[in-house]
Image 1 (cartoon, rainbow, N blue to C red):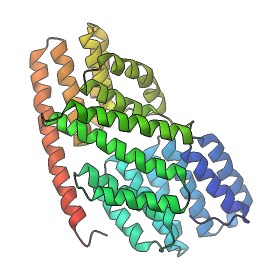
Image 2 (image 1 turned 90 degrees about the vertical axis):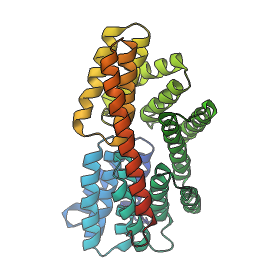
Image 3 (image 1 turned 60 degrees about the horizontal axis):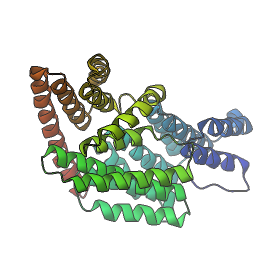
Length: 349
């Protein structure tokens, strides 16, 4: 979104987005409220679109993903009514990034490509988000072309002097590296060094983000780090992170995204002989499975459930969940093949 610094409405809107990205959502809402009061009911569609987009950012960083998606779709309709193609493109690119969090990779590819087609050559902030969204899908799909997209995203971010965006690109690469380590583990070919490199990358990314946005939550990344510790056999480190972060995951509404973390913590408790707590945690984890988790999330969840039941001595349940985990990972591999085919299509817009 292009803001004119001599226009207080545009300044308030841009400031709201900046604060939301830094995790300061209360302050961001105050800016949006002030902007709404300034423009009143007679605001143009373009103004309303910009303010609605800012609200979508706030909702996203409050972990209210479904509301954020609904709100950004409203912003895009307003941008289309205003015939503002760059603003339409920004809505598409931002929604593409939102969908990478919800696992809707087909929508991510479609929206990111549409954003790149709509955006002007100078709309670097829009192009950054679109390239980053495509890079995320490419790396999860196992395509080496992801690195060219990451480089394009970083260059766009540097041109607009957006340190947070540069850090976000680095963060996405670290998360993809962690997912790759997990896949190698499931395939039985992960080397410990691979997971250790993923740990270092994720830790560095978290430190970079913390230096730029101290108020941003570290819950999701911290729980991913705990999972990597489990893969390398560092049970005490994993256990400590789960104990610290799972209560915050509940409070911040990350349950559906991190359901597998409850099961992984259950496996830690089962191995430590705390059977009742392990069963409670596992029950909580499996409750989220009724919400239609994606194959990747189910694969990790079921594998942790199998490990928990094995530690509890319930071998039949362990075998059942082991089979379910294999099935989920096969589904994920099939999804990856679909994403690779989609990404290679020339008319993917």
